[in-house]
Length: 201
Image (cartoon, rainbow, N blue to C red):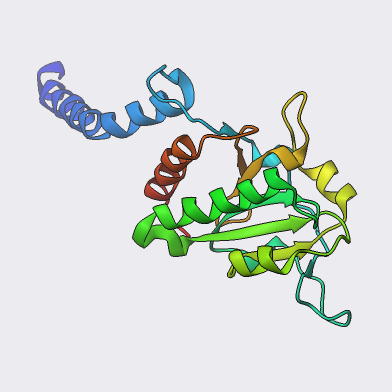
């Protein structure tokens, strides 16, 4: 009886071995990314767990909106990668540099740049200089209550949310935070990797 079972048993083991060989690259890449995390694979930005930072209802108003216009949230831009900057409407030099960096980083993605939306969350009622509006034509400028933003967005120690640029994925998940005074060249690499790895947005 055993002699009759051996060919079948061997055949099953061979099939299992073939399946393992075929699946090995996927299994290894999963382990390397999520478990082993080798030193060679690094992100400049900090990866955030979206479960810890669910996007709230921002009840935002477009800068150009009339008082009767409907409030909107970031879900209005679902399907796009969002680069978020948070600042006062008076937009000091650090704010202007962030807006400039965001614009240039989007342009640097070449044919992929249409997958990215630039969003400035204005955290107060200060008027925005018309030169800033003109220089950043195409950027979504939304006024949002500062307390909502502070409760939602995480900042590094010794920093505040206006020091950072954040990324939201096309499904509407907050997923990355760049450091204060971030290096645009390093940011560019992170963004390119995100766009390459994602089939959505």
